[in-house]
Image (tube, rainbow, N blue to C red; front, side):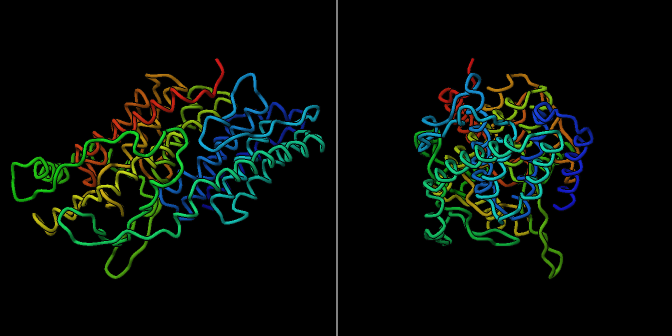
Length: 442
């Protein structure tokens, strides 16, 4: 993480070579905002946040950044106050006080990102480097003071709003009760970790009316004795698929693995390797799309905010269903009833199988990004290069979401029908979000 931070600061420092009085132009560089998102993504990864909580980190930071822009450019963007559940009002900038709204958006994003992520001070070096860009390029002290004050005001309102989402209440809620009833989820190897976030369905939604708004059909009834049953067919299908993976399908599974904390076992030694979470991957895609589209600073902020809102609601929708049905994972079923030595290609994450989180949030994010950049938006996804996985190219965001659907099946951690239904559910969440949210003014 330190290496990435050093690279990011070096890249920011590059633009400070010219010290003319051009801070307004320099701060309009959308790459500064994308770099801030990447920095938060790296901190989230380094502090071992699970994918569900990570979506909360991205959302509150992105909403804060967006509100700073909406306040500064009301002719272009609408505030999310009154559009997101519980967000009633966000203060406007003080009339007559010269403020740089691009820097305010960056500072508000970083302040919320640090506040909901911790540890304290984790983004200080990055924030200091942003302020240095402004001062090196001639930002007057009064403009800096006004900008910081406005960013702090927006951040405080968003932070106060965050406290009503029931996150803290779920920290002390009862944990998942493990029992070995047929078809019920139990911890999986190698870590046998407890069920992750069993109460996430209680978190306050943003746009969807409730986490029961888009309920898919119930999962197939657990049945491993009748070889003609729909359930048994799905078990055999995933077992065969994993055992016969082609290099292309292996690449697809690895590319969308997005396991933020993979536990590796070598003899008696256990160690973890980290990557961006599924939500972090899609935040990276939002940045790539903005750069590919040559989006300006404000549109880049807008794209990140809309994507983060879609991710957040989609995770709540999916997690609520997971803990309604508590379905057993393919790995457990196959090991117990068919082949004790079978392993999925990807490591099974610690939560029930039905429905698929990555499939749900990917479809929702794809709809959000399509609403910003249009359909048939071709791009190359390079987010995984820093983890040693070569890039993949897509004809559209929906094309990428459909590939994500197959990746969980190829990886051996979700049944095919589950992935298909989850994709539909995520698209429904995204459709509702893009219909209801009025962010960019036409």
